[in-house]
Length: 399
Image (cartoon, rainbow, N blue to C red; front, side, top):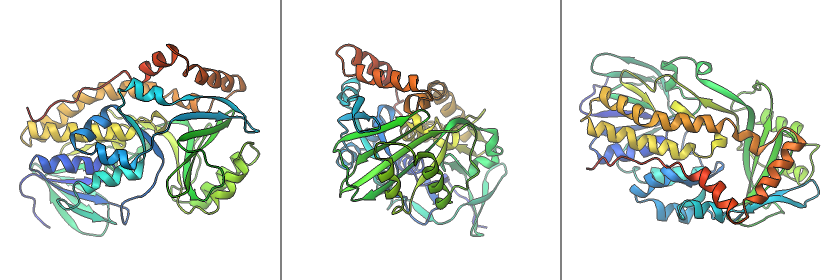
């Protein structure tokens, strides 16, 4: 078994939280190793709105110019009816006004790639492997990889998402996973005939919604959400079964649903998962800690999971620096600093499904009417201010 020496940190997960943590740990003199189950970085993914605490962390990393070049300026949210009439929506400039122009949209995979590039030449990266066991003693975490390799590290950080393998050390996923009554799916294709540049265009019926947005290189991405009272018994990687669910759910709906389901046939990579939260009583156990969705997923519909993951990485690395590697103090301070903010966001996020996919016709009408009010003077800025006004102040760990 390879021995541990110095401040070595194994980070499981090369999405957004893991590379962000590695970036800051390298700055602070730690030696991270990044472990990713997939054979390479994951491309694409769904569109996220990037603002607030995530923007703040990216700015400290010097990434904002690059991210803006990769990102998109969505200028309009447009809601359609079954025959293609415009029945709701608003000018998205209200988001930029509410955040002081610190707002843009970006594909999750593009954000992850740009963060990874900041550490690719400075960090040991292992693709195509995962953690099967962690044993801790007074001074070390002994890790067994799926490949059979055994190594030791001073710390292990789970940044491996909603279905974290590291979190198994704390208990079974069902102990922490709170299902919110919806599923989401996303995929992208080339040459879809209907394009609306710089707009998020959606159509809904009670309990479900489908949307599209135009990407570069004549590609179009689609996003589905639908309500179902209980979890579906579908394996995470069973793409044919996931496609069958989407067809069965949306095949009778109007607007462009038929064309979108036809386009689904040409996609081999699809995101499909339950809308749920991770709520845990603690985010660390001995020499192991969790960040991002592995620790506190607020739900995909909350819209800030990537931002919170980056903030958690910044906070945890900063607390380790401040504590000079004392993980007990650092883990406690990280959680004490961030948990109240996260819990307030999780409570608010429980209601978001009802905005995206109201379950009644009256609910749809209210949502559409409210969306039109956002473009009105005074009302729009007031609503946007409520949505974007709760900023989290990042500590300065260089002071």
